[in-house]
Image (cartoon, rainbow, N blue to C red):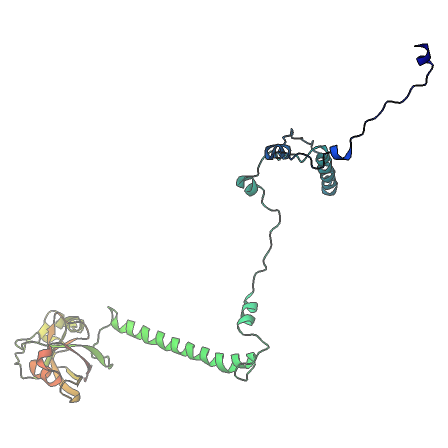
Length: 280
């Protein structure tokens, strides 16, 4: 025993595994173990609000991500942004559109650097558009003039009295001739007529207002005209004498004797359109 204490201490022997005992392929981990490592939950870290600039905060976030990766993986998000959150934070800037002027639209429709039928745009506007515009103004004025004239004639205040030398257009009818408002008795073979009651009454003056037999229209001459197309006779003209007033006639209508109506249209028609004018 004393001899052993005097001997030097030898180092502990290290046993090395032979090559054939060293594991070449480590055992495979299960799918559940790998998913568990990837989805390992870590408590979220809440950062205090700072007054750093966007560039500094961006660098800090990169450093923080690297640190988290080194510690064991990324931190899961604390919440999922919803549609309501996105709508409550709209972008601060939006693209602004410059309004298109009328000149730009006109240049798009008719580019100034092109020719139209060997004409420049200016020549086209002068020699084509300008005459069309003047023609439109002329047609518009003519239409307004005719419309005002017709509205004046068809108005309630207009009556075709003898002082009016214009040619009037209205319905022509016939009736059985007998004792008329003028106090004369006539028959169907005479060339006589009755004017509208509004015209007959408007012409009464003085004593004739109380006595229709004294109306100044009694005995007045009227020329009636119509194109007798049914018989191919063309324009037929007949002169008649006023002897009565027609209660159911419009101001420009005439009620004729059967003899006059047959000269202008077939009796079976009963009502036709014709023209007439005062002769006196």
